[in-house]
Length: 486
Image (cartoon, rainbow, N blue to C red; front, side, top):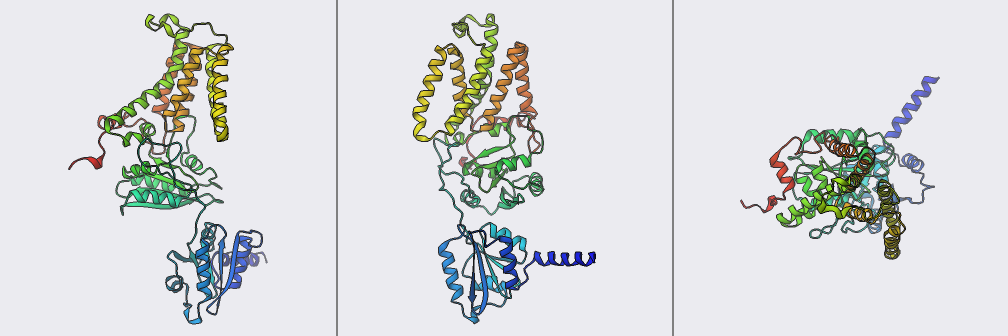
């Protein structure tokens, strides 16, 4: 008895995996699976198409109204002789639309439907017809807020992956460009696109990324590229230096593709992941290449020096204040004019926290209130905090420089990595003095040198392992390949 029940259950499961060809049975299965009577945006229309009964399923909001109106009118005007005998012929000759596919697997049908594709079922057809007339709600293409440039393209990625691939295709008109679609997430089935040049990419590394995406076992990628990044990198995240590089600029993504790297686009995210990633890649900015070589080199070196200063400035000042005899007479002006009421280490730590508090407040402040609140914050936290004796003016000056200079880093994660290492060095310097200061710098260097990445290459490449030719190109902005004379 139990064996008979198991056989009946297996038979039912096998039937449910493929289209039956009987419209009434298929409609019953679809209406039950899609909860068509409950979901208000799941719309279906039963039409008489040249003497044959058919049904169209679509999601309201994902289809173009003009296209739907014309398709329905076309199907209802068909005469008995106009309807092809099978699904293949119908897809080629019977539907006046460009993007038409067909399948008999329910899994593929349901995935296409939930992605916005129109489903057409016809009585007697053993396959469903998939009409890709979808349109997604999307904002217009505009310059990203974070990756702005003084000169150059003003377009940026949006939340629709098809638009993002088109922005890259517009810049790379080569048959060698590959846009490979994948998906991850049991519930979300999020679209993931791998962009690369087939003749330039490292195929071994590409295969590794493909396998990792295929083996992702998660229910959803709710946070888009961040969820994907954490799935791709299976190691520990104690090291604060970024494992990935992100960009919202299609010109930057296109340049990386042409260099043989891999660009990963995730649907619903306006950012692209660039692989592989090194510290020199993270420190680059688009402005380096939109200005002449000498200007680009200056900007690149300036950004590097400012990054070092934001890390060393406050720990060095704390060390010198604890050992004032080390200060040369020419720099005696940096000595505190008054003895602090609050220990310097606590002043620095409180201001580090206060700066992040101001950043979070700025993000959630309405635009109409941002200017008056900024003025009030500057007066209260600047002048009054010094006059009240909580903070020294020198400490406020150095922390103001650090706060502003952090924005020279185009990469958010790199800015916070420098912040975390600066706080650790401050604490070590306050507790252990000069040995703590040296230990903090060594920890900073070791964190950079031993930072693991997805590509398994050195994070400091081409410095470690040393390659002078590549390192010179990383530091000095040379002429672009397209501008070289033949």
